[in-house]
Image (cartoon, rainbow over all chains, first blue to last red; front, side, top):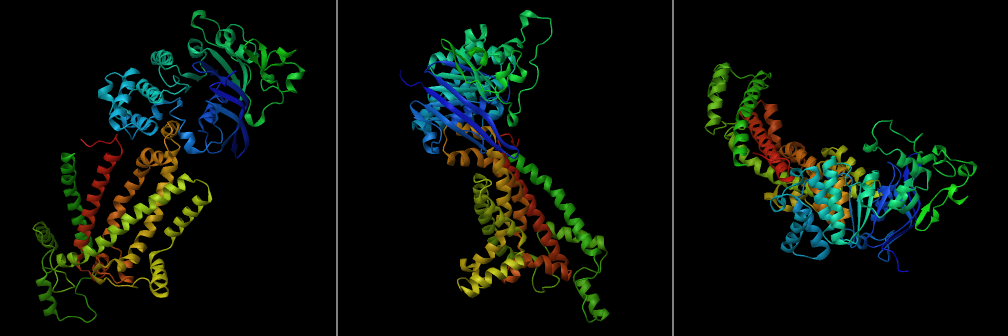
Length: 321
Length: 307
């Protein structure tokens, strides 16, 4: 079997804080094949963003990643800055949660786009401008030619995210990491951006990691879905199968708390308890004190993610009984 | 833009008028006068001197006459340095102060912003602590200590540079005064730059630039420097006015023919016309430099546009 596009193995991310070391990502294993779209869901603080910032080499200064992240056959962790810069923005791209603050307010959109092509592909300014403008037009910025040399403050929120997507796709990356790409946008714009993401995916054949807390976003776009809880991947499988028949109690609870407009009335369902403080993770399974099906072994032994059915994995003692 | 500049200069005229008026009357309220000497003058001589300098007229007439003179470009004779007009004194002193001051400002911007950026990039490392520790030292050591210290080391012991003197503005003579003048500014600008640079480097758009694979040089110079320079630009307006008009301490220690000493001499001697001229020059400089700061803001920050 050939090597996957991205192979994350035993990834741990820890942050040194005044209160002690915080484990943000714990022993994550995940392989992503060329062209596939993997959704990563989890609540705030579940480590989904930090795991992929570690992949990008963009952790905050007090963060340390260990384990292995192989991309297109090469190890990313521990790489020197210069060789990392030859991959980031060219083969591996990321768009961020808050598009309004992710574009540089002091530079024109054209400048921020052309620099990518000039640095990575050695294009001259004219060629870079032509290609950048083509992409800005492609992502649906109205009057792109006229807005090309504007500063970001003249763009709306949706236009910011469109420009971010265009910027990320300039060099036709093999993998695009989209971190909550629609969270900061209003609902109609969210739908437009997701539709655009789906179109671009088929056009560029890029693999996509879609990080979100919104299960609806995943359902529409992802081939596979991974569920994260307290820094660990607790379930992984084809999106349709996971939604139809969740194997991990946390996934089940998450799906059960989804608000559905077609079943109006009734109370909103919440998961009992609070997500654990990463400084004081419970022993054993991190979810056991909120889990309706917990039993003795759950509080003593950490369940590893293991295959529970063809192409499906879950980290739960129920499945190994 | 041109209209904006014209409007700002027009708005500066009433400001200057108020400053001139307040300075004129405050100077006269202060006890003593330019011709109060240890030995008393005969009433006859005193009356003739006062008449010669219009001091025998009522205050409001003196004021109107002075304003009239200034508007026609005449800053009057110096009350103390006879044989010289105030304009002549300024013309003699300002170029030297301007030359030293401009060199000190340029040095302070380059070194200060360089050190501040370096400290921000190496935040919380020994490089950071060393740079900021030096900066703190630079701020706390007064120039009347720093100047003799440097003179002693580089002028006397090492004998590399002249101890003092103007020497027609030779570079060798300017090195020490420029450094003494620039040191506290370097220190202050370095601290300002570090603070703003640390903040900017934590911004989301800097993370975007890194995610795009931009080398650190481009991240810092193209993506971070403009925003990080804004507080420095604000500080530089008034700071430059202070430095260009000369420092009495530095000019005295290094025996330089600048205009800094006129501020002190003029005030101590009650040399009314000289004090008024220094006030006007200083105020005009502040106004012009603040205008330049605001224009620079427009250049640096695309959200600031001057209609």
